[in-house]
Amino acid sequence: MMELDLNLGMSEMGMETNYDVIIIGGGPGGTSAAIYTARADLRTLVIDKGLTAGALGITSKISNYPGVPGPVSGAELVEIMRGQAESFGAKFITDKVVGVDIAGETKTVIAGTGVYNAKALVLATGSMGRTSTVPGEAEFLGRGVSYCATCDGAFFRDQDVAVIGNNDEALEEALFLTKFASNVDLVVPTPALKARDALAQEALANPKINVRLGTRLKEITGNGKVGGVRVQPRSGQVVELPVSGAFVYLQGGRPITDYLMEQLETTEAGCLIVDSDMQTTTPGVYAIGDLICTHIKQAVIAASDGVIAAVAIDKYINSRKALRNDWN
Image (cartoon, rainbow, N blue to C red; front, side):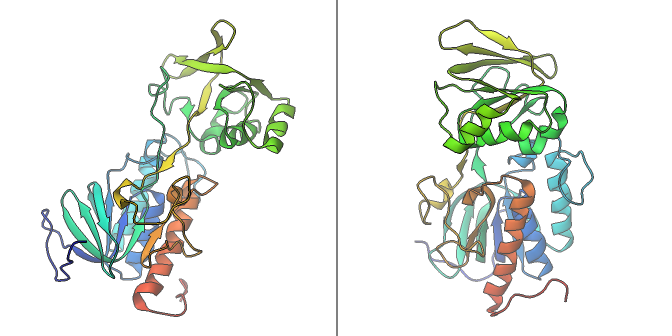
């Protein structure tokens, strides 16, 4: 492990390198944490790869974030939150974190622009989404292609949509879409459903869901926006389903933790283990959002995680036995 220099220093960008809190990731969770830590007079640095680097950043329309009349893009929402954090004194830099040293009382973050030290870390790097492998998927992302029915389902009221996938998430999202869509084609690549039995039975019994077992997605088509999906049963010809939306769940996301170099305990799925304060198995290191594999993948949930971590960090750094009320 490296020796830590606790004297104030400057990065290659001429920035201070020592902080109370460093937050890795500037999505809704990381930015919410920054609002609360900066407001608590903790020197806060957020290191993020950019406004459109995360899952929220590439979301085209958001209408269900509390207090923000929509629709707004994910990048716009993050920018609003970032501005609020900056108004309390949080600093943001655009950079990639390549490593951390969390063994000592002072935590070190190694980024492209320099090495930064902090008393506490918040890990908010999200999960790695699947690579677009189907023709038309990347082209129509945000224009009918979505990875979040809970986020975008209301935009497809009284329209036909397709859900592609065979995990619990795909079936849950298909069931959610029946609240809005006229018809949901559930395209399942395998001969049988692999989701939880109760969930599978609920999907099969829903009159709005047409389950297409053993069927592969070949292409997403359209002109400026999604107009259909081309699918092929295992023993049949390619057919085109006229739909306005394609919700793709072919592969699950995996938490982005490569920069941690296995310094923290995880589950078999790669999720970081945290307590009720979002603290990991290493004191002073907190993880939020998709890193802890929260079942409900919503910006407001990640933001809530960030607030919990920030309040706990204020207590941790100032060695208080009780949390400080926000309304005092």
